[in-house]
Image (cartoon, rainbow, N blue to C red):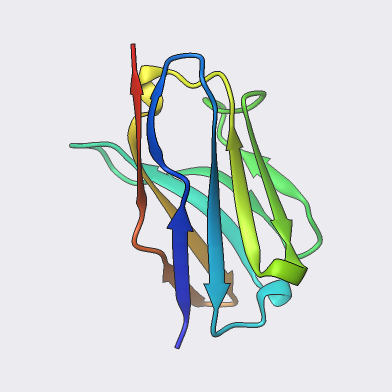
Length: 115
């Protein structure tokens, strides 16, 4: 079955960096668009960044210039490098894969940014 396992979350001070990883299994990874989403308490889940099979990227305005999404098809892994973190970046970060209308989510990893 499809599994997406995120890692790399944690507690960091404002201005710091974290790199999230999402390891996928049960899919042909290179054929899937991948994305990172986040959900803060009391708020809706929102797109952070996405990357197509061809490597094209999209970023939410609130992370552009600070976060970078990338993928390594040989390792079945998508990454989110997060720099210049702000307290408002605190949320659970989720990995998502999409192949046509097939969508799966990871379990999420908590990112907490202290001021």
